[in-house]
Structures are given as structure tokens and as C-alpha cells.
Image 1 (cartoon, helix red, strand yellow):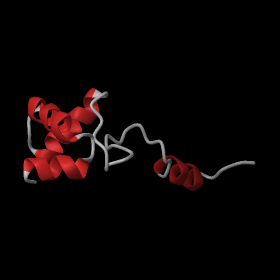
Image 2 (tube, one colour):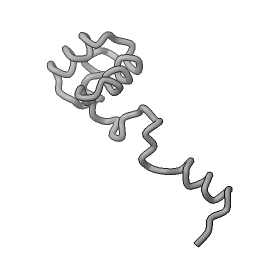
Image 3 (tube, one colour):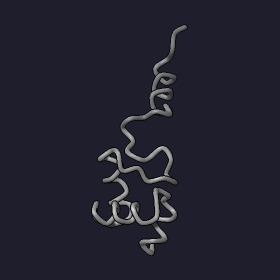
Image 4 (cartoon, helix red, strand yellow):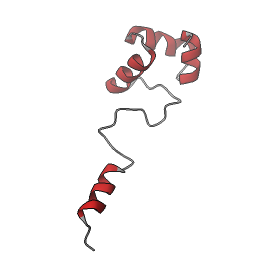
Length: 72
């Protein structure tokens, strides 16, 4: 089977495992294991890494619980 250039571009631009995207796959949970994900959440919430880790320690990994804890 041969693919046209437009079909290949569509496939490349619509892949589910796009490693170039730096957003958590499950944005309802905050993971602290990957540095890029910690950076994402710090920027998203406008807080420092220390504040993020303290919030997760206090209320768990739920993004909603962390937002509520932080008043966001």
C-alpha cells in the first residue's frame, strides 16, 4: 500500500502519542515523576515547584483538589 504525501502528513499530525506535546495525558492527575510535567503544572498554576510539591503532599495528586487547595 502506498500513501500520498497528504495522507502521511495527516497521520503524522494526528498521532495520539505525540512526544512533542508537553501536556499530561491525564490532566485530572498531577504527576511529579517527570520534570517536564512538574514544569507544566508550575506554569499552569502559576506556582513554584516547592509550592506544587507541598500542595500535592497535602491533598494528593488530583488536579482539582490541588487547584482548590491553592484557591485557583
